[in-house]
Amino acid sequence: MSDRILVEVVYAQPGKQVVLAVDLPVGACAGDAVRLSGIATHFAGLDLEHAPLGVYGKRVPREHPLAAGDRVEIYRPLTADPKEVRRRLAAQGKTMGGRRTRERRRTDHQ
Image 1 (cartoon, rainbow, N blue to C red):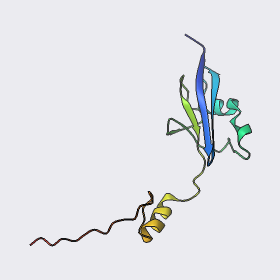
Image 2 (tube, rainbow, N blue to C red; image 1 turned 135 degrees about the horizontal axis):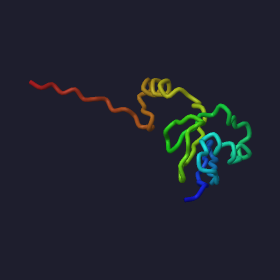
Image 3 (cartoon, rainbow, N blue to C red; image 1 turned 135 degrees about the vertical axis):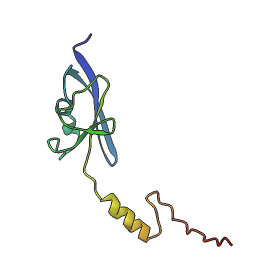
Image 4 (cartoon, rainbow, N blue to C red; image 1 turned 180 degrees about the vertical axis):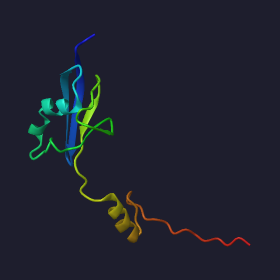
């Protein structure tokens, strides 16, 4: 049994995505992986101290213990409130997928 694990640390912005492999000691946590990855050097202004983290799409605390093969994701803040966007699109007769909503036909059953 090895005393090391290999994980990935990922972060993306529009137009740029970085995936880094990080070799860590067994018992390392998500915060360790992010800090030791050096990913901040790829993105100016990335605030690693306050950015939420996740493992395979599930939000985790920085103290979350990692297993070999885990993918630690650094989440960026939302640029718009999804509820507000849906409300605005609905008012225009559109959906989040870009399609127009169809008017429902009313059928009278007698």
